[in-house]
Image (cartoon, rainbow, N blue to C red; front, side, top):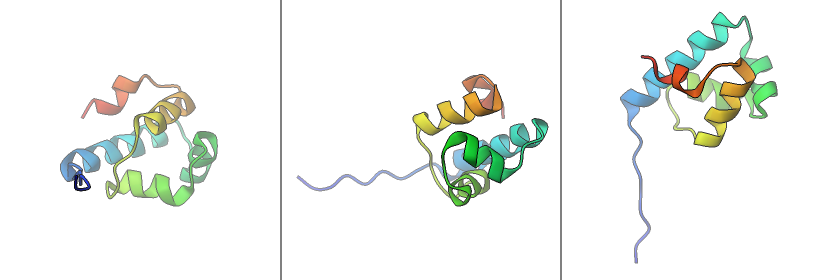
Length: 77
């Protein structure tokens, strides 16, 4: 069996990243502070916000908790 390669949806990642940026700024939190609260690197958070990487549900859950938002709020494009 070959290795499966999954491609991520670039448009969805960009929209999601913009939404993370919006919610972060709305909360008055810097990228560094949110990365610390979420226990991810600032460079990974930056990549999420720029829409150049896909993320996991676990990271979404931690972002949600850190920003005190419901998960559904991240998909209100």
